[in-house]
Length: 79
Image: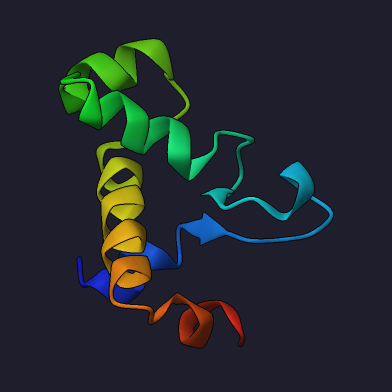
């Protein structure tokens, strides 16, 4: 799955979660997934804690963060 496809799994909607980036179809913030990864949790452990997620959602959170670090997210979320 390409980064653009992964990032499409992230929703930024002012009507959902106060506009914070979350995994599409859930109310799980991207930051929660990233924090879990930073704390050393494996993708499998994250999926155990959040069974509504899929492995691609964890990859999507990482891809979103990478784009944000490159300051490209505004281009992806503006459409």
